[in-house]
Length: 263
Image (tube, rainbow, N blue to C red; front, side, top):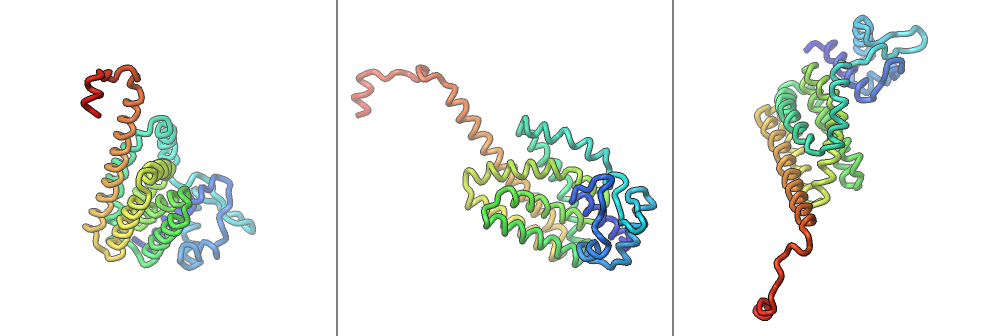
């Protein structure tokens, strides 16, 4: 991928990650260059390209503004109803996990082949932030950092379509990550937390090592572990609910002779 296209992609990802809406102002070129890890010239070229595409608008002496939603509004509109479905029926998260498996086995595979030094640093920082929040006990922040970690890997794939789809899915993914983490930690927090940390670290290391096959295996194992764990929790919850619906007088009464034998 040409550097100019790479910077355009990173700038679009930054706009989406911050949730900038039409009419909102981008940070100054100097700040963007620092955050993206590129020169101000590269940032200026990316802004010019996005301006020509109608995504951004540059106002002389005032800065650069978002002119249209910067990443496939139709995708975000299509994904929006899913958030409500997941809230009303948690079983939709299995569909999200299947979708993530289909997408993230590809993004991990590509990231292991294409990640630049800057991409790898970004993935490492996201991982470190996730661990920091986990150790501090901030569940919501840890869940958001978890989702950001997976998005950082998608960005390192340098496939603009995959990146846009993953960003459009962000709200849905974050919702399911928060719910999955809550349920998994409620049952066995220390063991579950350790397992997830090892899985994330193995995935990151495979990408840092440039091993696409291992990266694909790691993300597959991770998502399968999450699926199996929450499925087991859902089954346990369903059994408890069924037992609670059983009338108290439905249990067979013990005869006095039975009581004598049991004592």
